[in-house]
Image (cartoon, rainbow, N blue to C red):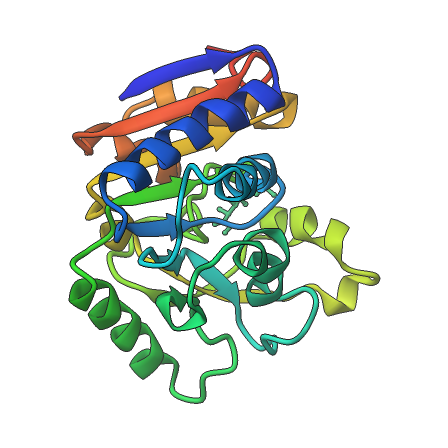
Length: 241
Ligand code: F6R
């Protein structure tokens, strides 16, 4: 696990963007794993700038998102479909058929999850996966638990996650309590992983992910056994290391 501590959010975003950009230049048809949430917004902005400046071209890139809320339509402005379009996909030249996000309205959830795994495999696997981290140590929406759940699945979100996500919703009742998420093995099969975190609120999660032993109660701790993980955190998120 390689650890990069940056001065602030801006530098964290730039360092992460530099890695994505260099991959995309080397492999223009790369398979990129995407995360949502506040943390990668700066990184996505930098990718948009690099695209506008002519450094990168998304026309052959394929993307797979980590997760989507369950029971939320993709046109809902709180869906991760909506987020990805707004923050990245609508601003670059990626063909929409190259973008993959789990269907939160799928009638047959099991079939949707299996199909997602199949689509990732058919694309040749994920070359580079971007991850954020929850305050409870989750990656994707793999919440702390007794076991690591391997494949893409439907998950009941933790109270802490529901609480954290509520900042985007107008009332508590609207906050989804379930999501579809890539599993731990799905994430671990990515050839390269970048985990980004910013702010004091993530310091404890980063400490537990980086310093503690591997345990499903700290889902991000599994990253220790991945051969190519870069953790990029600002000074505040690194403050307990
Ligand atoms: C989002 C995801 C989550 C977030 C995490 C941090 O697709 O998979 O694991 O990365 O909850 O969210 P933020 O960045 O909003 O603090």
